[in-house]
Length: 138
Image (cartoon, rainbow, N blue to C red):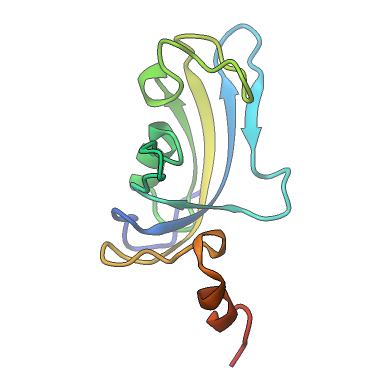
């Protein structure tokens, strides 16, 4: 949809700043999720694992981002194995079993590296937030 202006693809543990919309590719073509309706883009840390052992973002979005350059916007057809699988998802967002998805993904920017990803403020301890440049500009 739009070529990227960046020169490198995001690497493992990089923080990607993204907007994305996802639709079910079934007869209803129902929208599942849209970050564009929110005030700010989302941060996605590639390969991030939650404390409960689950990946924070499903594999499909991560695989899309790995192929993109900063500034790029693209459409992807995602198989069920990279989304909600054979079981589907029956709470929010509700997705039927074996459902393909269409993803409109925009990679706004990339921060961090394979060594140390940029930490999300929600993951910081109080002490780290109080010393953060976001709290105390220089």
